Length: 209
Image (cartoon, rainbow, N blue to C red):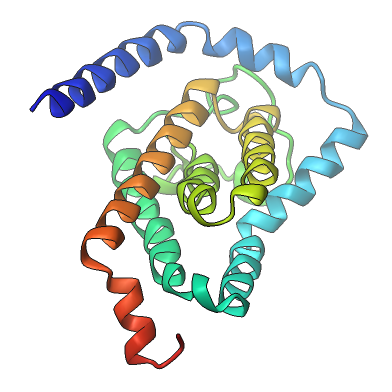
């Protein structure tokens, strides 16, 4: 019971801090956008391409498949991505927060024509950052099974989050919310796997272990 109360209190404190941060979002976005230069542009565009096309996730899947003892985590790995993606989708259509460039706060770095459409649909909403959700949802599994790699991934995830503000498509509060949501989803999937061992059973059924 005490553990549950601590979780509830933690969520409440985080929500309050996030609401406070919203009041500083515009100024933070303007400050970060002022750093734009051609070198950062192309570097961060490259990182966006990697995560947009799920390239990095497929490479990690192949790596886990190559390491026989880690194969049980392939299913939880993709379950984290799928669940985080779904929750992110639902929150976006509930909150419906416009992006910074749509509110005229900053200009968008047109890395993709997708970001300069005139018609807003569900994928145009800002809160939370889907890229941050995806980047952080796999971190708990990597932290558990690939401890030496976790710092590299954490650096990658932070840069992905930073790029969303840099491009003018998200506020800092969007990115932080996405990171926390993603990480919490990953932790939940780990708990479920440790309790029910679904990934382990699938590996045994398919005789991949």
